[in-house]
Image (cartoon, rainbow, N blue to C red; front, top):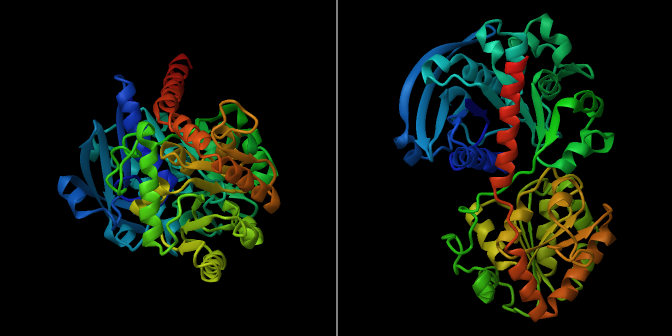
Length: 478
């Protein structure tokens, strides 16, 4: 049984967020747990792929890909790591750019990528039983297989995973043929609300629909979370399942993490304070261990709850705490956090960038991680926080509600939770966490316990494996 994971990004080659982390971890976990799978990952050969990674690659071949009236070069490269085959689609015109997304021709770029995936099986020699597509950039995979290809490739089963429904791949109807190389027979499949909606088309065409947490799978049936697709989701709920993401426990391990100054474990939790002191010094914050250091590691956008912090930021800093913000996003929020750091130079620091090594140093140094998201499909930061002994303070939504239980209300609690998207509810949860922190012996015991919380890939990968096997068995029966 062969599985090809189709993704616009994957760690450690090219990634901007959670999808890249998942694409780099899940295939490897599946290979470690199952002997019956051959697993491949295919992604564009982005400009940010390192030269050292390119040196590992083998050139398999090339061909021309026809996309409507265009004929474009497509090269295919391969490498194998941890028994997973990685394939890279090369076209420098489309993919050798400064970044992965946000270009005027993203629709055309990823249409080319999806066609290239389907039309290069003869070059890769990898003929998948199941193609697993992810988010709108690969939504054309199930659409093409159902509405364009009328040969044996139609027999390939497809899984489509919604990592974030806010980004749906919307384009004008005039792009149906000119950009996406689809005929009139596909119009009804992709049309929604007067335009092309690639995610809608993928939801309709895929054999199995997944999301990245059970909570998010339920939320998407409602207008508040589904960004207009709630009826499409409900109509396809029969084939939908929510499977929680995980993190790579080898990558995120404070005992072996070379990015942090001082390694530590549950048994040496007091060494975490050394990381805090080093970070405070590097950010010109007073080196005080007796007060909690609260971290925000996030995209600085509204649906991540930044408006709540904007509403009560100064009230928050009236507490005896320090606040470190790491992330990029809307200028409104970037400017706000810079202003807050200017107003409270001994209490706040704003780092409007994203750097994975810096993020790890902050996870290792901080006492608490604030995640007040309005919508959170899964969330990986809270899992990383637990791994590094940094207590999550979260809004009960999506995957945050699936992974974090309030310590004040559950014996096995592993964080602090507020139920309503309200600034002062968030502030009260932070204040409860501060009160717990002030009882340091109990706090250190709490940290030791939550560091034992395992949100690795094993359990989730087993669920994916069971899903893939059932898809194959159901196809045989049919």
